[in-house]
Length: 368
Image 1: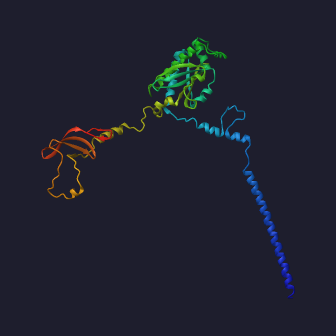
Image 2 (image 1 turned 90 degrees about the vertical axis):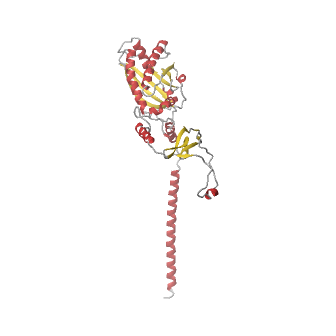
Image 3 (image 1 turned 180 degrees about the vertical axis):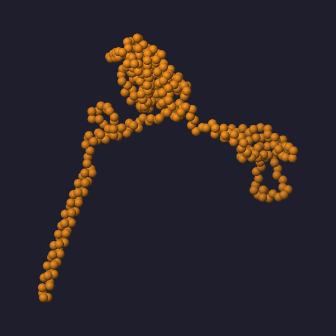
């Protein structure tokens, strides 16, 4: 019995070793699978973008035409270049202009004219010049009081409509559009007369806000010769639609923000006559209360500088010598600020000061 025990122990040890080896092999296989998954995940996270995805991210067109809305990073950059500031009173001014132009153009053309406001937007000056459909006439005008310029664009449809109406064209026929030739002198003169009418109405529309004279400068047909600002400058573009029964066209008014800068605070008002932080009722109340304010005045006959030791040695009966005479002036101060000068005297049973002069302070320094 004693001899059989070692053999049983050896067989049990061998079985335990085989079990441990099997467990280690299984753990090793699981580790290899985990590493494979990690490698696959890392390869998937570092995937390289192709050229189409890069172009879409940057907002670049494949054909290079540049038409349509831009997207991606380029759209973000372009949107930050034009800073549009809402000017509430400017909308009121152009609404007034529309009503005035309807009446003045009816008198000018002796026809039934309807003027409507299509849009008020903000754009860069260079982008606007590139977007003008040619042929067109561009009138440059100057705001005299603001010492800056604006631009008025009349499209070809309105040009031929105005010429047709003023020269007695028949109704019911669309205006003929002739391509491939410059505008004649007659056409330029007729359009120039209409521009003068519109500029007169624009001046009248701004009168309640700020009296301004818009003076006609020149008439151009090439946008390059109508440059009144830098290409990146922000401008306000107002589109007006002029309808004359079955004819008509568009007028676009471009005013740079630099031109409107002198009246910017007025254009920021929500309604006519709005005051920014000022209240006449409160100002009158504050003025009335200031006149009733009581302040204390000190009459200073003279000032003497002494050592602290001498002051501490003063006793009853000590004398203080002043550099003043009975005719010397007394300075009356409010706090540390001198206000008046006068002469010391007596009135009834009280010591009094008769004011002689008012102290004038100049450049922050106190002087008599």
